[in-house]
Length: 129
Image (cartoon, rainbow, N blue to C red; front, side, top):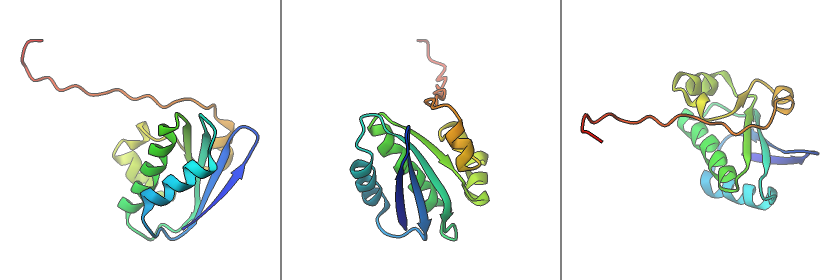
């Protein structure tokens, strides 16, 4: 997997390409901390050229690792140009409530930078509070 970083005026774009290989969490951690050294980075993860022939779990791990590292830096992450297979998986499992997903780079750049909020579900144990 290759990661090309493009720094723009108000954000940075991480353009992924090729097949997913290697130890993802360490690779992504190194990329995020080396390239996005701003206190609150704004990152668009462009997955248009990423080879999606691999496992869905590997692709999900890639997205989750990027989100974790950007969140750790109190930044914002937008994901764009997902292949239909991973997009359908994320939507079907309601992960679109966690990840900020866009059809293409243009729509990601034009949308406002807003932190994605989701409700925490609480289990009702039946015991009085």
